[in-house]
Amino acid sequence: MPIYQAPLENIKFILNDVLNAETLTEIPGYEEATPELVEQILEEGAKLCENVLFPINQSGDEEGCGFDNGEVTTPKGFKEAYQEFTEGGWCSVSGDPEYGGMGLPQLVNTVMQEMICSANFSFGMYPGLSQGCYEAIHHYGTDEQKDTYLPKLLTGEWSGTMCLTEPHCGTDLGLIKTKAVDNSDGSYDITGTKIFISAGEHDLTENIIHLVLARLPDAPEGVKGISLFVVPKFLPEDMSRNPIDCGSIEHKMGIKASSTCVMNMDNAKGWLVGAPHKGLRAMFTMMNAARLGVAMQGLGIAEVAYQNGLAYAKDRLQMRALDGAKYPDKPADPIIVHPDVRRMLLTSKAFCEGSRALSYWVGMNLDISLKHPDEAERQKADDLVALLTPIIKAYQTDMGFEISSLSMQIHGGHGYIAEYGVEQYARDARIAMIYEGTNGIQALDLVGRKMGAHMGRYLRRFFHPVSEFIEENQENTELQEFLFPLAKSFAKLQQSTAIIAQKGLKDPNEAGAASVDYLRQFALVAMGYMWIQMVQAAQKKLSEGTDSASFYEAKIKTARFFFTRMLPEADWHFKAIMAGADSLMELDEDQF
Image (cartoon, rainbow, N blue to C red):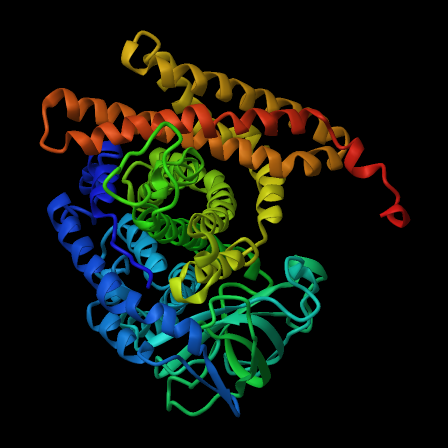
């Protein structure tokens, strides 16, 4: 049977010692979010994840969702778990107090997302989709729409979805065919079909609020003609049924307890959110919230896969250590003594701890971008979040799948058997690399939109603090073994950036060919930047004296593995970028 324990000690280390998240209390609206309060909330969240959500994860996968005549039923235990989830106020953690939210920092929600995704990936989809719906209405809805929908979304009585994809178009939303016709009373009739709609139909809430992309009759072609509409399952004024129906649910490789629906609308009543033909901007509010959530799915699934691989490696006895028996009183040594098993475990550990720091840094900057009183600080933080969102979505979901696979490998034959649970993690993890914009699309977003935006302003939000850190610590002898490889890899990232920008202006295929390697190179350097700060924080704690010396020593040792064994991968990606587009593009289609 699989195991999960929320990594609270690691979480507190990142929040308190590395990021100094207490500074958020200086921002108006977050004054009460003290480390003590946040710690209490996260401890309660950990109990929920460990004791309520995790126990129904494997059974939920085995049972899956049921579908009968347009009605979807979630697996046994999900309704009860959702009720406990909502009664605990977990849907409202970072919600606006004006509509019943707790008003806590987004950073707290980011941490909770990690733990929820570790405990029960499928369950997390239901409240996770509601978050994107809430954000879009909160940013672009009318006062009436906010008053109608936001309080119910924050209590969890109602849930939300994003209805974007259609059978003939996914990423290219300019091709959508769903139609909206004005009824001249403020409402619209929406007709069309949407596919791959997560949580589109289920039995957890009394109403489901769909945000639907559609075209008005006079809409211009392409993405400039997209409008956004709120289309409730039950009309709020009298709770009568709206004709937006689930035609079927998908039979999937993973996340089987999450309903993935085909939604059919036949003159369903909807109301415009934001201005006509301006739905793209509102859509990106939803998508960015969703992409950050998916990044946490990658980290969450990697963490639980790592924990299970580690437990198995300590317990499974096979052969003797290469340099002699470590446990001579036992018939064999546990497999954790073997170098290759340690390589897999350390890769997993270094990723989970490094990406946790990187994700939480993004979450903290999201809070600064939303509420800091200084407009310049808000803009800087918003730029950094925009830059790093595609990077952490792609890198963390790639690695979530990779580490799930490593956990299976550590388990040997048992990793392939459902009883041990880890094969589910690999199946669940795989979707995160695809939805909310495939990871290849994230890479194109990085080089096509973020790299050149505002004359490189987004890039400077990352490059400047890294450069300053390297310069400030040149004489810090305790950091030299980590600082030198970071500086070297950072210089190559800057070089890659310049070359892609130069070549991409002449030939867009050059930027496209380099995009995935560039994103991965960028992610590794960003991880290195977070790891060296973790080393610095650990060294500080050790110098002050602590009862947890082993914990902080392990941070430094794990950092050493990252810098010597994982960061060098960035050099390989640099070489691939330098190779250019020719070898990718010269083959004719009929030669494949």
